[in-house]
Amino acid sequence: MDAPVIAICGIATDAASWQGMPVDRIFVPRGASVEAMAEAILADLPDRFALCGHSMGGYVALELAARVPERLTGFAMLSSACTADSDEARAGRQAAIQQARDDFALLADRLARAMLSRTSRTDAGLLADTHAMLLRCGVERFAEQQAAASTRVDRCGMLAGIAGPALVLAGEDDAIVAPDRSRDMAAALPNAVLHMIPACGHVPQREAPEATHAALATWRDRLETR
Image: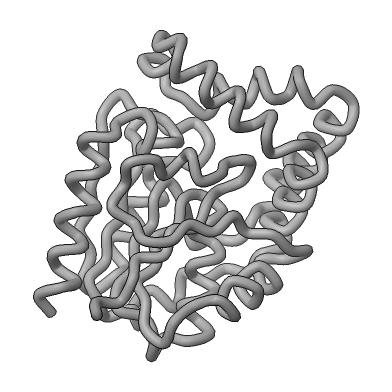
């Protein structure tokens, strides 16, 4: 049996963010730290698996890869980064947590727009779906995930040791995670394919589903032909 592809969601997203994508299992990470999130997911994984992390899910995927590299058959990062937060970024997360506690509905409206590119925002249905997903997340999970992401460690140095087929995918218009971080990761991974999607923001699975599906399917083919 082929090793399953494990998808890990980003902050304030859920299984709906992976709708229609070629993945086998989807995890919404929970825990007080990225390390705790990885530990909880690891307890429910088979002996061999491929990882596909979106945004904060990528941070958790990197932590898993650091813990059990011998069990990893492939690695994909969508709209993510290997770096730790800067002091400025940590302060921004704390501000977002406070805003969420003050008025989560207002924050969800702002964040839904920030997550999508200008082009994607013109799709009223997509914007409404993104907003609804954020509301499903709720204040407590949002605050927990933001706090966990703010304390993650830098994992860029380990990328050279991930030898399996890798995919790095991001939107060219991502306003949440700078697209150059994806380019840097692809350059550091020894067996990576970089896929940048024009006019796409932070959620390529929903903003550009056909292009994202095709890239993930091609990556899966590489896993199966190793």
